[in-house]
Image (cartoon, rainbow, N blue to C red):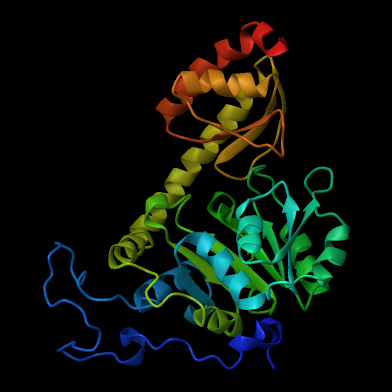
Length: 354
């Protein structure tokens, strides 16, 4: 029995996936097997027909980009759906547990708890390194999620540490959320999937590829894990326009464009860190390997409101009082931020002391 078969929800072991019209038959010139309309009312090729559950061209394109086999790729509606699919496929309500770190991406907890799964958050060790207690917590869990680079801190766990953790937990699926990996591609663990049966990697086109509105993500894992996820995914998760957009952005031109834009964003991020470091009222600034910066600020709540009054929205977190997260935008957006930030930090804060 494979690792995925041992870890999955028992009812999935013998479950036959829903055989949609696209899965059960292919080819043909006259399609009368899916109760579709024969009219194409929108000016989008193929929009009146159901799409493939896993469009083979897109699957191949992302496999080529990530240097994995197509059978190790599952296309999902953003990485968020990948999180939920993993929980639904491998966790039994009232019995299993999901573990992650805190502070980190909030959807690990939300997805677990909405599925009735116990969730445990382990605090990061000082310096945002992996705490020793994570191994003990992971032994009792079906899934262990680690966002790398981490959101909202932007910090990075070395790949060797993550692989060592996966090896220490052979009966737990260790899920590395690489939503921001294009900003530090040398830190990806995708190439380690084939040699690490319990390793799962989440990816998305929402960040560096600039397709947040399209909702297209990927789960990378060994074939048996992907096969289990295919049992619980919806019949048609990838709309035709989304697949077309994704294929375009994964072309050679699209990848080169992304890499150029990432270089620009990385340079702007470092410029922001330098500028913040020179401002009064700014405390610790975390070194970031992503497209955002987390920094400590005096009277952070007031600063957040001041910026919002100027039409500039940044992010605060209840788990990190006194800290603010800024996404890296265009040159004009970053100039607008600094123009509002400098006077806001320098003005007296009597209102904050009342």
